[in-house]
Amino acid sequence: MAVLAAEHISKTFGSEIASAVGVQAVRDVAFTVEQGTFLAITGASGSGKSTVLHMLGGITRPTEGRVVLEGVDLAGLDDEQLALLRRRRIGFVFQRYNLLPELSLAENVALPLELDGTSRSACRDAAVAALEQVGMSHRADHRPDSVSGGEQQRAAIARALVTRPAILLADEPTGALDTANSENVIQLLQKLVLDDNQTVVLVTHDSSVADAATRVIRMRDGRIESDTPRPHAAEVARS
Ligand SMILES: Nc1ncnc2c1ncn2[C@@H]1O[C@H](COP(=O)(O)OP(=O)(O)OP(=O)(O)O)[C@@H](O)[C@H]1O
Ligand SMILES: [Mg+2]
Image (cartoon, rainbow, N blue to C red; front, side, top):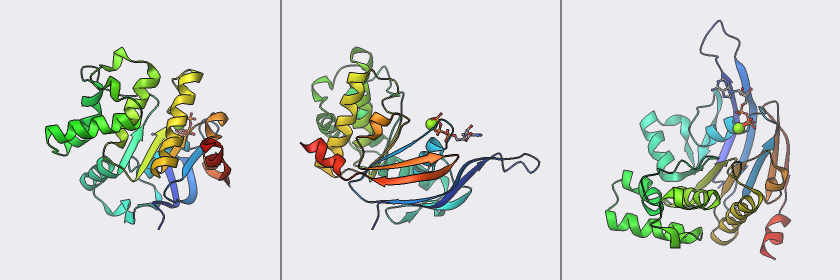
């Protein structure tokens, strides 16, 4: 079974106002994602990449079609159930790391578990393990502003991973990073896919970032223009 399925999803913004002409951000997009895939979604600005990602992650509800995550139709969930599923089964990474400045990296990473009522010591253990996974456990007790942008993004990835989500969704995760830090973060995502069989969907307009993926979907004017498997990408990363 696919981890994730986008079943002919469309999104029109503004359609709730009868007199307004809606913006058709996404039109009839359909694809499935198997576990252990590193999928990059690329395309020009405004082509609908982020809107697709937000629908995959249950942040935005499609106007038409449906998203199925691990066999669960997101359309069948009310807002509260959807919020729970987002917290437990989906990891989000954004261009801005959104780490809380007054908390240590470990405390930031532990937040999703803490919100779920996990005990303090179990939170700490899981946070350190997730930081270990991204090569950041030696900075567990540092505040975000005392580490580099690339390290902050790695911590944000640890926070996304701490619940062991079915899927990691990333929107331009290297957008704020210099070349060296950007490569570092992309290599980390590749490692998570190869070593841990993590499923990753990444949105980027940077073709060098997309080169790291095992599959590339190119979008244009809200539609899928091409969908290309690149199975060799994994082998290149391994060698
Ligand atoms: N909340 C919204 N309300 C109205 N229109 C929106 C909204 N969000 C996105 N759009 C429009 O939908 C289209 C697709 O936007 P989207 O953000 O998905 O593009 P994108 O490919 O992620 O672009 P970028 O590379 O600039 O981030 C654009 O025309 C955008 O203006
Ligand atoms: Mg975008």
